Length: 131
Image (cartoon, rainbow, N blue to C red; front, side, top):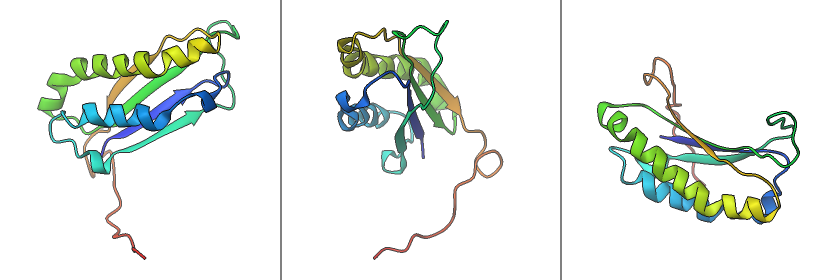
């Protein structure tokens, strides 16, 4: 049930980026995390309509990966290691492509807690109709 959002600033040409490969690498790393069911993971890209970075410098970019999950003691224990693995993926897959666009890319990773399931965070109990 993790949710992954990659926020990309407006000045990055996302046509140059391979998101399928990127998210496949992220999901591979998440498979190693305790009790993470990657088949329920919801991942996506938010390409901002407006971005203001630093002092409004055109060459600076935003590449901000957010992972939300319900924290457990086991997940908290691996959080830093996981963040470093996710950062490495961004540095390998995204940074070179952004730098080829003559932009400055310093990615960020945030791993955050949804809170308590059915108290802070809710998932529909609806059974989807399959055609």
